[in-house]
Length: 273
Image 1 (cartoon, helix red, strand yellow):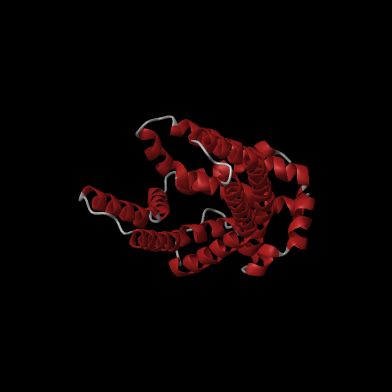
Image 2 (image 1 turned 60 degrees about the vertical axis):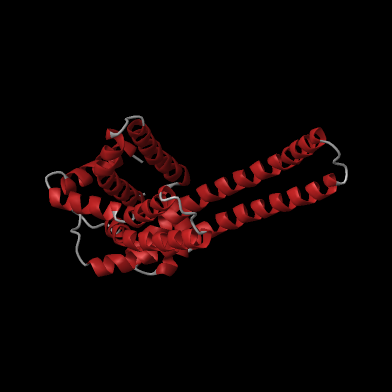
């Protein structure tokens, strides 16, 4: 695979679609930052409550956060739906139209992402529960021998030492699982975008067949390349105070379009391999 050619085509696609088309770029920026509004509003209400001296009610606080999170997810659906249009292979960069359809597609996209992340959540929850039970068990057993402050400290140290290894192993397993699922989900999402059928996002036989046609090594390397590029860009911007985050918001739509077109070409290369 000619990675330079794929990168160049994706960059040209984003440039031709956004540079010189300021309205479309601004619309994408707006769609991108919409999900942050309810979260910011919740944070401001919470901060205002603290500044007034009132003691925040925990249930109300968490309830408000959950509502804000749900609204944020719904507001982000249109942006996700638009990215799916790019993954369908639309060329040149499609217009931001049919917002209702984009919203529905974005919600479906979100459901697919949630399904793929469930195994990782299960592993992390299992690790957390196992660690908690181990702490409780060791704590109860050690309480019988607790006589001084020094012994209390030793007990706490022994407990943390005994569980830190298994916890790290569990987290490592979750990370590896997340990476594997990400490789699979990338092709799965494109299958959904191309067919319009959510079930195709989990058609593992076709997904692995596509990866095989691309070349497993070529596919993995291609994804690593795009991750490294994004990592470098966002790391550099993160080092720039005040202006960095503003630049990040401005160029993020360009980067997202670029990435979506890049992934789209990876998928299409299976037919030309």
